[in-house]
Length: 423
Ligand code: NAI
Image (cartoon, rainbow, N blue to C red; front, top):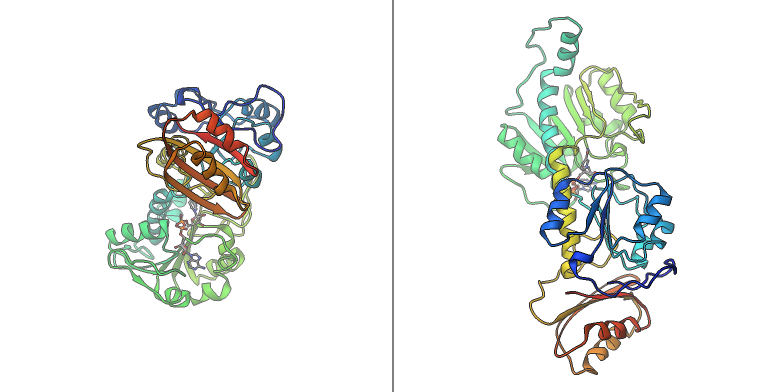
């Protein structure tokens, strides 16, 4: 199926060059959603082992040596030394958003694309924000706490409908734009600010600056990535630029808001409320303590980074990552890979498809073409993508041929990292 990646352990029999689907061993860890297992099996990958837990480094090193494909969530650490033992591995799926738990550079150098699911949980975030807007505008957290404590606070004071209010969305990407649609359906007026030109959905209106949005909105919600420009984007000046009695929601990244400035504005009632899901310092596990200057403040919803944490998101993540892994294994497509040249390939309808991953040095393509032409084979289609130090070439070849012999010849081209052919 694959050749041996650089630095891989030399013990054991050499990995075969290509495998039928049923022989491709897939190891899924950390309770990956069953939607992924079902999708893989439906695509013909019957050899799937799914464990509910993460493995420690020793167990992982032993198990990964046998796997052709591995699927993990955020707790499994695929370090350089673990990957060195993964001599058969040709694809990694992260069934989550982040990929920090994988040594992406080592995986890339070994010709292993890594896939994740960056957007499968975005609807969940948008829905939570809608719920929070309702809760904030009605002062529900305070009324609920009082009711739990045996006090009856029946009043319409400081309780508002969201219909007709102006929602300011900062970052009109996957989450911001879905939120825009849901908020309009609830009768809100939507303004948004994004550094990229974005098509306005429905009746939403763009703002030309963050300042314009902050002064126009009664509720501001943040949906930007963490970048140098968004770090501390909402500080004391921005908070004071919001109208008195307005609300702030952050379910993006904890570093975007200056939490001390927010706490001060909530304490002196410049802001009427806030809902915060992400924090500059978040506990590493559920057993670690959580501290924030926002604790104990009235009309402030604090949630433990759960904006995207729903059963539906887990199901969709399972489908999204399984689909990307299947496309790569079946077809060679690397669309959505986080560490690899991205190639979108049509389904192979004739000939034999060869995949060749190599160091991006001059002359590889010439030598590859020579392997085919010297055997009198026709190249029906060829796809090439390079990305820094890595090149990825896919060739659909036609004619009478012995695919393993061709694969062997391709592997001998200087600079080859790995090669395989598709059944
Ligand atoms: P996205 O990449 O689809 O959209 C982000 C948008 O922000 C883009 O349109 C981009 O052009 C814009 N942007 C970037 N820098 C900006 C700036 N300086 N000013 C204004 N706009 C700027 O991302 P998506 O999926 O909508 O996620 C947004 C945020 O939500 C991310 O930070 C992500 O980490 C976070 N998130 C949080 C979750 C949670 O559980 N609370 C779950 C999922 C995502």
